[in-house]
Amino acid sequence: MKNNQSPTEIYSALLTLTKPQPSNEEKPTEIKLPKEVITHIYLYLHDTIIHENNTKYIEKRINSITNIKELFTFHKNDLPHPKNITIKELRKQIDKELSVRSHILKFSHYCCSGKGLVYKYHTHKLPTSLRYI
Image 1: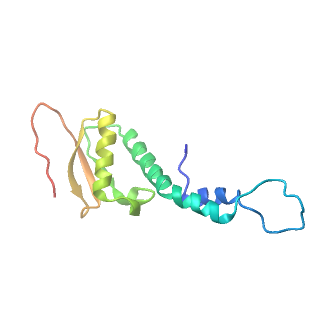
Image 2: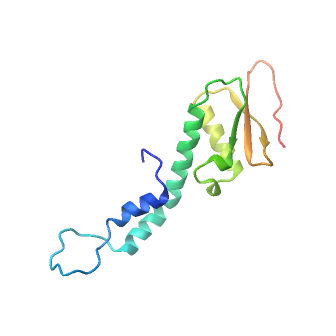
Image 3: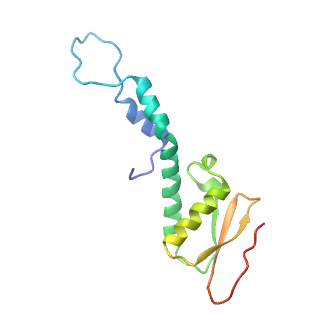
């Protein structure tokens, strides 16, 4: 998926593939699927859609970092689907994205009563201890 579509938009698009209500037509022009099949396909894809939307948002935020010497904060509630990820999973995903992009930002501490993450500029010259709250 190239853009962030809500699960509702994707489900609506899938519903266009369903069988129409019975009509007076004798020959249907297209073969369509029953609504139950479309619903099953959607439920199968639902978690993947949400994960991809959250991942794209995280990547966009990381790519928007302009000054690595400033604190980088990320709050779980900023995600398009915050209920579908824990703060620990979010931290793991951000750490992974930062390591792929060779950033020298490292996790510093949790903020906002455990709902946010703070990353700081980190050089490898002096060892620094990470603080976990």
